[in-house]
Length: 292
Figure 1 (cartoon, helix red, strand yellow):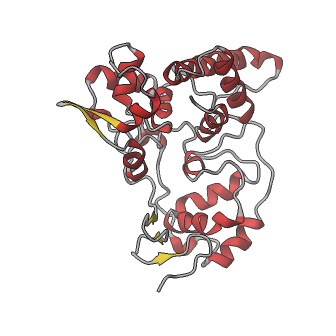
Figure 2 (cartoon, one colour; figure 1 turned 180 degrees about the horizontal axis):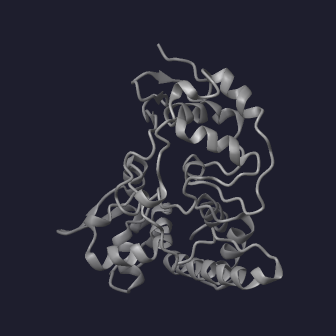
């Protein structure tokens, strides 16, 4: 059974505003589908679409619609259309040179956000909405050091500006649509929220779509969500696979498959727990201390 709080947190990670995410999760739970993971996710999509439509209808009453209440009918633009790294951005133009200077710079940022603020993809990718804890400061420092084009934008949104980078989740897709059946790939191109949802719960997207269509036979008594997270569709048949690990290690390719170089990210060593930066040096992820 899916945890409602988990569903709410996941929707917020997609950029859905807190109130909308909570309402969508509650509506899905009240539908009685919470004990059936796949139907719960399907109802979650329907709730998001309903809430998004309601927000649009109330715009004339001076209520700002929630464009981040991503519905099944929302089509993401391609990575190439929505993402363009600033060519002049360079590490030597950053407002900080080391971790301590980064801490000072970040603490000095404003706290005024636009009424229609939408969290940019790069913050959702880092698990941030508007603020990050001090324990994750080194991770943020490493990200902006390796991706200097985002620093000015991060500073601007803290002073009331809207992000100039994608906020629609278009750069956060990890699945390779080219490896899916054509019908399935077409469905996800038109319903990217469903793909993000499948990825968010570590379910194989093709098998998830087959389950939605009633074309998948899962052994009776099996936990559907767990089965979808432990199996993978291939052109030669279904094989066992740890989808959680696969997705964790996958690059953000974007919905169009051209976003592999969008984010330059340090890696976490699962054995030592250390952060491995792009130059191969390893650091304590909490203190930023260089490992011997």
